[in-house]
Length: 228
DNA sequence: CACCAGGCAAGTA
DNA sequence: TACTTGCATGGT
Image (cartoon, rainbow, N blue to C red; front, side):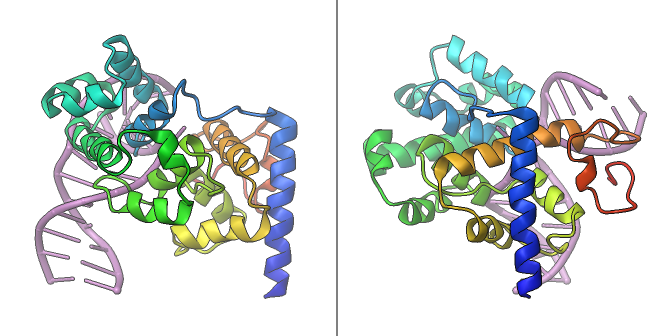
């Protein structure tokens, strides 16, 4: 038990060092405003980031990437605007829910929201239609500067392939590994998650072998390629 | 052509 | 409670 504890701790520290050494700071989240982070967090659900950028650009160009505009826009018009991000009908409704929540509970003021403690904020966010654990935590960390570690598909894959978790580990189980071993520093959590995604885009794509991938040495012994 | 991408909610047994 | 399915575009 304490054996696994030590292995995990060492793994997390060494992976972070290797990623930071190879890629350097990522400067996440890629957005100009906090609202753009929140909208992007919903749009990127199960969706390639390139498609999300197309949708965000359309909203910005139309001058509609604002709480008041999003609140008054018909849901069908919003869906049309975000079409490139996929699942546009679902996501339009979800964005409407999030915007309504921020207007209702915080008078549309993200700075007011930022002053609230994150455990309460997370419970509130999880109660909003369309916001699950990852979206909630992305908003908490990247829009509201809270020290909350974001777990995504890349994170899960990374730990799974290196034998740090089992197949049935759930979101909070994985998250707990990070929060238990790392300082609760929002900038560390920010960079670490961003670096994992950066790695994932290089490394987790299907390809015959991972020659040249930075974490090749981190694959389980005897395993070649990405194993997908 | 098939497969996948920075999830989540709703339905079924 | 534990699975399964729908949602949809654009890149590789």
